[in-house]
Length: 160
Image 1 (cartoon, rainbow, N blue to C red):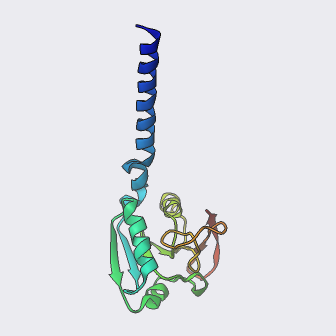
Image 2 (tube, helix red, strand yellow; image 1 turned 60 degrees about the vertical axis):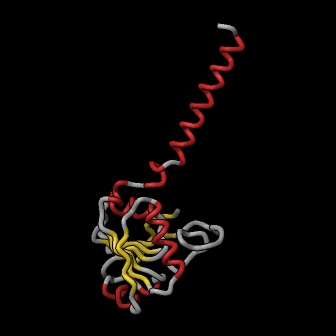
Image 3 (cartoon, rainbow, N blue to C red; image 1 turned 30 degrees about the vertical axis):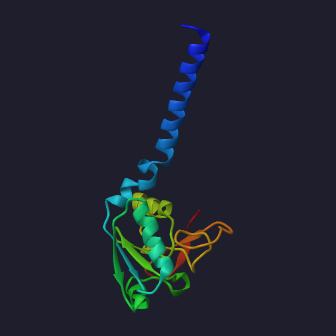
């Protein structure tokens, strides 16, 4: 085989490998996210008029998570019924695996929650931080995700 043919074949193989790696990195395996989340029923309560909540549902679905969306005019009652401290309230509440997940929580935090199964009621990302899943704008700092207990106490769960 001539050296120019070897170079051409080597270049084609390298290009094929590059396409394979790129496809794998941006294909459905990465987009689908964790199988831990996919194994759980997810119910999200939101106001029927909230656009960022709808964006968050889209974020979860893009990750391959099946979401049962319940529109309600009394999201506050859902939060109170699930023991979410008022300081952690956001615009929507998600129930998954026996936990309450408040706000625009990245899936990495939910994966940690469902894998570690701590003895808490749930986790929350207070307010609606810029750049968090479903929210416009750029991320301005770490997302301080809090864990909360039945007595209303809340502490840091993780930073993302």
